[in-house]
Length: 83
Image (cartoon, rainbow, N blue to C red; front, side):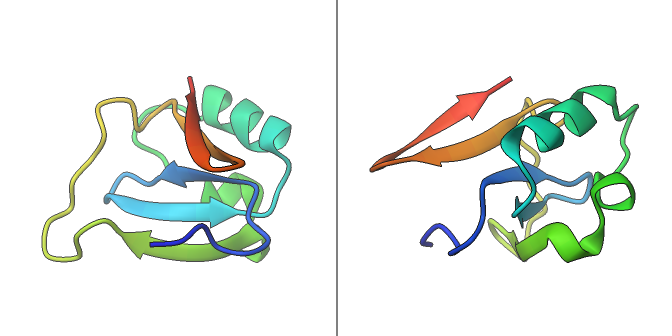
């Protein structure tokens, strides 16, 4: 999978869905840190800020260990993880 054009970062939802956002990294990181429990970021960031949504494997809803606090950003040719 290639990084979607126009997206600044990505997060994972409670159902395993990966969302790519066009909101600022700072805003997504702040919302991620202040979202309680198993809640989606969509209500706070809005559907209009979602560039693309996908599942790593649609037949299995895997969750990363750090899905509740990770914000993933792309840098040049590699991907960095910020917690």
